[in-house]
Amino acid sequence: MVEVRLRAVRVDLQSNTPVLLLQEPEGVGRTLPIFIGAPEATAIAFALQGMDTPRPMTHDLICELLEALGATVARVVVTELRGSTYFADIVLDQAGREIAVSSRPSDAVAVAVRTGSPLFVADQLMDAEGILLAAEDESEEDADGDGEDVTPDELVGEFRQFLDTIRPEDFSS
Image (cartoon, rainbow, N blue to C red; front, side):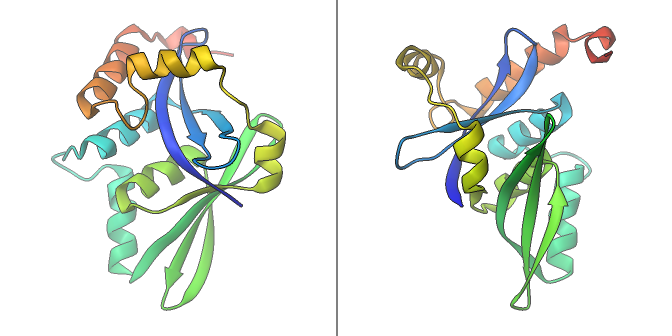
């Protein structure tokens, strides 16, 4: 497994779709881009901002259920790509026993951000799908703010702008 960090959650300008960028902090610095849905992107942005909602969002509820059951999130692993769909596991620790729960990567990352759990990508998957961002992409990221430098308000603002421009037809096949 390759440990990664959430480098950024961006909106792809060509498809107008949110994308997670999971980057290995050491080694070559490969990045795994995963396109996700707007609600999940918003949930991740809320967690990064530490924003409280009047009622628990689904990912908050998951964390509360885990706590009530005495389980913690040991790690999140993006495990494979089948067709054009990524798969992930949320690996729980309950009384010293590890339990892997299958998940969409976006939901798993939303839970990991809330719990401060480490993120990993399977070696084979990173070898096959990891990309190196060009130097100009990195400088552009730095100008806009990457996952470490972007303020939570900027990230939420970016998603609000995305939500303001999306149309129902964008979801049709």
